[in-house]
Image (cartoon, rainbow, N blue to C red; front, top):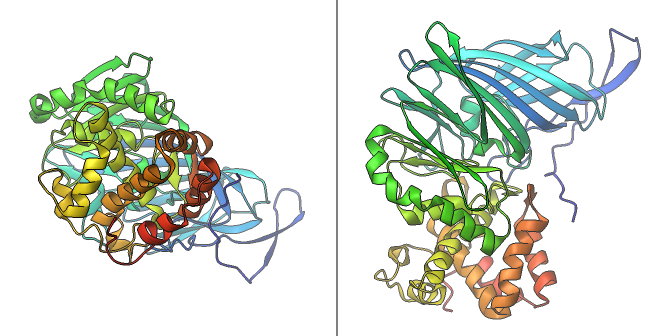
Length: 467
């Protein structure tokens, strides 16, 4: 089915300007400064859809300065007299649109750009933003930090949900996905790692090395990453030929070895359970343990804060199907990411003769932390499809009750229809976006079962379900 973008605010003012090159009148109006996401209404921007980001970055750990040029290729979805980019903190040194200098101003995290001439509906246009400074972390509503995070002589850019605006300008809502090329220049002796595949690594003089990374599959801005450090790098391939690139902080190498050795097997297992792996590469970035208080499923190379265990690697790799390839239509749909990745943990255990998904489901109902420590958390505090606000989109109900929703579907429809549902969902929405309403309609149509009770009690119902 055709996926639609979120509604954007109506703009009543209509600006009529004259182009300098042809004299033709073009009707343009400002693009909206947000996409009215239920939890992050200012995230993303209206009036255009990004097709490609080319980021050229230079970072020196010695002084913590980041210099960047972002070339953003987008298609206008309306006539545009101005448009916005999400961007926080760093100083803008200049903006061009279609090769001509553009006026701009900043209000909070909104960079408003006024091209020299109006952009026509359907026009593909390039915006170049030069910027520099010492990036600062972005603080989430739950108090955690994202954006550009430094520790010692290492640094990493992470973005869930809106931190990517702290290190590059863009349309930072998951509903606007694009391809990426990221070039990073760092002092000799450092590695620079990003999403996708390494196209080149070359000395550029003055004691610096340039790394060029390419991501050919669409990616939401919050899944973009760059990491700089004196990493230990290892490469390989899965049995089916997916390239693997692991970058590990020296102090975390020994503790990471066992879990990362399972990565090729995990990718192959996921391909059997959920359908073909959706990207051309896989891997990991293991930062020093004190860097972050969490792991993140950054596309093709999840970021770990300290050495991960096998279960955590499995969880973040599962997101490559659920969250990265099939991305949420809004941040209210987070359970489609986390509930699916959590249930993947249950399936991994079950398929290897460990605790079954049924046993885990029962343990959560009983609060049996001996089976799963998550069973002791307040997984019934709110429905997984209806977090109360932005500060709770990563709470226990989104993960654990989200997984329990999937198990209830499995109980209702049987294993054959359930696993066909998982594979079909990943295939039919590959590299797209989907909402909870999309999923519930798809599940009922594909399985042929009336799942209204599951939705009413488990997905949207108040209180803690009894079974």
